[in-house]
Length: 632
Image (cartoon, rainbow, N blue to C red; front, top):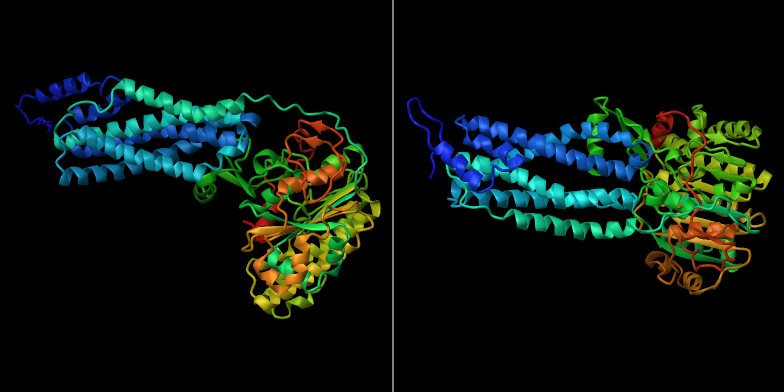
């Protein structure tokens, strides 16, 4: 055993040179990391200084590697590389202190573990102990990263993720090597002995890294090699239907089936008897803005761009970060209070895909979008666009809540409707609700739906070709409900009766009607879609509807497994097909729930949407509106 304790005055020191020579012979001091970290174990300084100095070096070296990877990953999944590539440098500067602090703290904990191991276990080969501890820590960190970040990877284009996937095994190896070298230096200081031999030769390490790179990056390379999507500038179309989409948020599938079976929704049942069908879908675990935008565009979250309700804009960045994974807690709890980042909502500018009503308006046809997600600020279109949350925003005088490009008089009329609705009294269904919370519930949940329905009646005057109407009263009311289960059941019944009356009044105006009943934030795993076409749907009176009518209340409790299944993206594709637009290769085929007209043509895509309106950088009023509604 070599004596590496500090020299005392008058004592020759020959073992220090021998230890350095032995480490160099084994190859530990021939590269940068080894020399950077192991040299502290070969100096006649105090052990306490080594215990503090080595973690600082680990924090710097590892922090640089981790910050580079995190910066590139966040920029890739949030679109910064495409829109503002110079965001990489300030993003790296933001993440480096966090990564360095995390790595330094982790290394201190690993050092304590190493001390315990060496205290109770006499290690003959300290290099094995150091490598084992570093490897376990590296595998645990890799598992944590995969667990928290794997859902972020599909949200960016493959050609941006390919370099990240190529660098992943290299960075993982370097991190393990840095930690191993630091732990080995501490082990030398604590045990006063040097390694016997290297665990792995450089050839084995290089071969393992190359194999890992090949296995991880092969799918990305194959995806990158795909032909780029060409977008048609002039979309071919043919005569299509007038389309109405109604989104009812906060309704459980069992509640809808129960009311249908009891005959309390006769108008909806009449649609089923005259060419309509009910389909089911599995509710994806995504933000409400993501789900409803998928229906409106026919695309999944990675493609339409709306992946969150809020975002963060660190100082120095041009494009906000909507996808943050586990870093969200840091931005929210540390960076924002310190003034290092701004907290912002996801505005309509983040949506990259066109909605079905926007595509329908390309020929100058009037359309209407009322309270639908990812529409604030409202874009000018032929017809009327009333942005999501417009009721509260209009009462506060917020700019960007309404846009009526060809009918400027509608802007004033919609604002008047908001003020008139705000003077209405609470509904009778709140008879069992605590009086102190009734007024807040009405203004937060019920009156906005009444306002949206009134705007819909206003929009029908100019005969829009495509309409999207979102009614979230039940979802908002369920959040913090205090009136008991019976009172909420009465509220569900009364609100669905309003929806039924609204839909029943439109069957003469529209040729295709889709009503989506989604559980929203309530505990439900399935949603229902009522789809009606004037030309009829296949199996309009199929086994699904018959089972609902025959089994009655039992069906409401157990659910109907005979219902055909569709996805939100398929529903969006069906609405586009009904409008007479071509089939996009980026979209799935319309659902088999109904018969659809043949496509006018097949195109590679509908293009990337460019927002036509900007209300400024923060959208603070809209952010506060989302918070007041309980979404944030």
